[in-house]
Image (cartoon, rainbow, N blue to C red; front, top):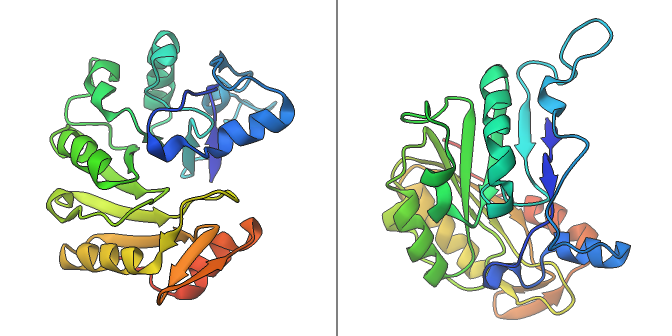
Length: 237
């Protein structure tokens, strides 16, 4: 597993961005997140060591643009070069998340066709309104590997009619002392939707404020992922 951030910085885009970890981290460092800048790791996938071998070894999953959005407008001038590197490294699998799925067709390379085999696109949603808007677009796009991230999930959602050709649905709550609560009942409902469509399901993260059986708990940030794993409700197909 590797991470590649060709640029960093982002703009809040919808309700799910309210307590964005990128903005919070930058605020602590005195960095303006709204300035999208190219990083010194731009060419990471094709960097080689002294032996002339790629530094990122073959077969790895590469998390792409996790300090921004790969489809953000400011990335338009750099994205073509990124696609060229992704194509060159066909021995790697690249995964990116986006809240800007409506820009997808304007951001793909000319030879995209039905999609690159080594690219996984994850459409993120946080509530029913964004689910209906984004997933209606997402389901019609030519992409070989599609995931959905309901993260942060801030209300109960029904995505059952959008699950055809989806490989994985990931669920996570919001992390902040003022975070909107995550109800475990919403998580189980989404799990049921996925199982009916034989879509893999992963409960990635509890919320800081977590409701189970009508009782609300406040969890520490360091425990959010481990508590989700302890639930033992992940499903693989």
